[in-house]
Amino acid sequence: EDIVRELGRKGFGVRIFNAYTTFEECSSALNWCKTDDIDLVALAHCIKNNKGTEFTLAEGIQRQLLTFTRVRRQEIRKRSTLQMEIRVLMDHIWREFQGYAVKEGNKRKKVKVFSDFWGKSSLFFMNHYPHPAYILELGEIGLLRLSKEHNLKLRKSTIEKLSYVASQALSRSLEELKPELLILKTKLQDLERLNKNIESFEREIESLLLQTEGKLFLSTRGIGVITAAELYSEMGDVSQYENPGQIIKKAGTNPIMKQSGGGKGYFGRISKQGNPHLRYIIYNLGRCLA
Image (cartoon, rainbow, N blue to C red; front, top):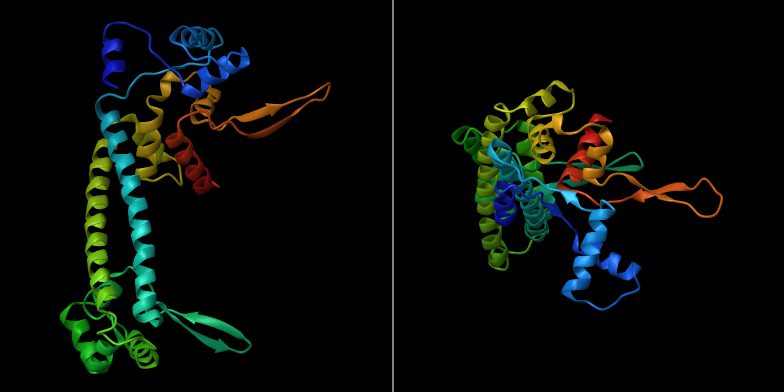
């Protein structure tokens, strides 16, 4: 990026080529040798056939938004993986904590102990009382006292369900589950750290977005602050595009045309020859708007 930026400052027109493009150009010439001269000829053909992408790096607030939104997405994916690991650990420690089955007529229905598994109350018990032995020791009176002391706002029905699953649990002893309990504690600490990181990134993203024209995306129903920021940071200034086809090609969502003989041909899969980040955002945005 530093090289591209410096060449741009000196007035050079910069084009970016996918390495696979030059490979395909060499193959189409039935030339499997690889030398610098052959690569230069292949690049010249790419330029002639307009296969290169004119590339300008994001600057200023757009660059800051681009960095924050991409890092936030990475943190979200890390959090999703971590949440799955925590659920697996809770399955080993106390599987009924996530819910239990009851029979209603001829059907089985899952009953959740906590309406939100990642809510304040559920996380409190996973942190401090992750084993049924703790709940049985506290009893319903102890659970009610904890709810008042830590402002958990536990309903009577939740306390009853928690006591019930503790009494019906088939968990191993605390001594046997010592490794899992320690791992669970560290995973929950990691989850808390990730949540704080994501919140801080989102505050910065919102502040930056309101300083750009990207805030106009918020006028569309179904587009939130984060989506608008991601879309603006990947697309850049909308005025640089003359028609929708340019954005479609940049994202790589244009379908590949296949034709043989005298037939009309048909459109196959999308090309995916574009910005994968922009393509990901457009796909999610399309789902939201649909």
